[in-house]
Length: 151
Image (cartoon, rainbow, N blue to C red):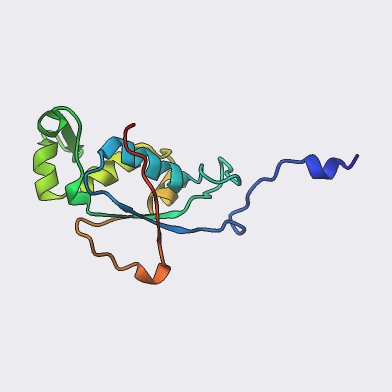
C-alpha cells in the first residue's frame, strides 16, 4: 500500500483557483442570500477548502436596493454604529438604511458571517455590492450563482 495516496491535501494560497459569481438580489431574503454568499466567499463550496487559507471566490451582488426582509424586520430591525466618542452611537431602521445606503445592508450581513480576523478581512474584499443592475466586472465573465429561496 502506498501511504502517499491517502494523505489529505491542504490548499496553498498560490494554487487556489478563483472564479467570479454574480447574484441578482431582487426579491431575495437578505439573511438566506447572505449565508450562501458567505459560504462562497469562504470557499466552503469547494472540495479543496482549507480553514487557514482563503480559498473562496469573488461574488458580485446587483440590485441590492431590491432585497427584502421577512416579517416586520423592515420596520423593527436596527443597525447600530459607534464612532468611539461619548454619545457617538447611532441607530437606523432597516427601511431608512435601504433608502439611504442600500449596499450597507448586504455588506453588514455578509461581514457578520465571516471570520473576525485578517483572513476574514481578505475574504470580505472579494465581495462587490451594487445598488442597481449595472456593474463594471463584465470582463471577468461572472457566472450566475443560484441562491436557493426558502422551500
